[in-house]
Image (cartoon, rainbow, N blue to C red; front, top):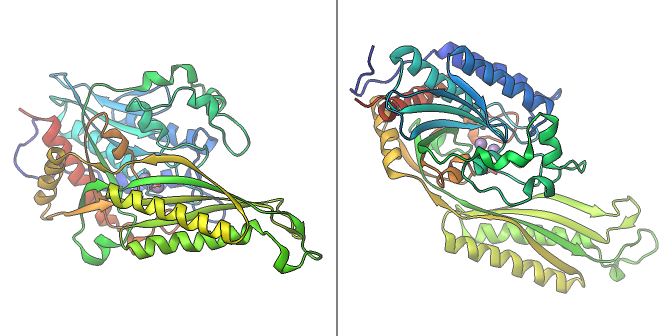
Length: 418
Ligand code: HGY
Ligand code: MN
Ligand code: MN
């Protein structure tokens, strides 16, 4: 059998796809709802074993790379550069069943279906379960995609720790990976990479259509702000003599959100963590430390927002007699995806009768890092209620199927050329 070059949509095993998404959602399921699959944890290993078994079941050549990304491959008859698809297996704390998981399961389904229906491709075709994207466990993110794109930092595995003080290198050894070989996960042979993902916002649901293609992914800056005041007795120190670090941090959090509101959509700024010291009920906090996640797709506007966040924090610190330190944890610029591969996706969507919406992604994705290694494109399906990074994250089954069929069609068009 040969693959058709007409605009027919590729068929997949819809029930298998939906059942596998449910099965994967059990790995790392939390007792009170939501999922947590932190990098190199038992839940993560169990999820990786499951997807590896699915790749093997389909007859794909399967291998785990030096950081734990798992690849399944159809050896193309003509060799050359590789066509790939996939997403990440890890989740945020209390996350949902689709962020990352959809792109992994749909990628395996698409490649398996192409193999079953059309046999060997002309180009090499691979699906991948990327080990980590979310930065949930370690103070790092995009670990898997950065390894593929040769963007690991020297000494990173020994430097970066989780909340228990375990280094990334130690966690790797615990799952039988050798951190000294991490750099060998690099791929210099990729041609194209497509990531299917849930939108994680309300645009497609509110305005349609049922598919989106991403043109730009917003740049993200993560800051750590440390505010120092003076610890004092909560009963004995008068209110007007305090230098309460937490109250300063709280005022800063409000001003930071306000800066994004004043700049207007799609500017965003989020204070996602806040810790105080000494963290005791009867002590005025002497120290507060919080993180800021701020994003904008336009580099100039993003810089402006970061400046405003710094200025507002400094003003508040000085008004309250507090000292301030702002550290940039990471700063990832906005990226533009490949018009050529996006057009392949767009034509595949048209075969399904959908003219996809061109979109900017406020969320970060492996695809943005992989632009350094491949011509990269992203396909979005709607998120019910625009919800994501929460247990309620969901997409209608028919949209999951539609997205996967369009993905399979685009991969066919790229990998089964005459
Ligand atoms: O933070 C992000 O945008 C992604 O979900 N990791
Ligand atoms: Mn996410
Ligand atoms: Mn994701």
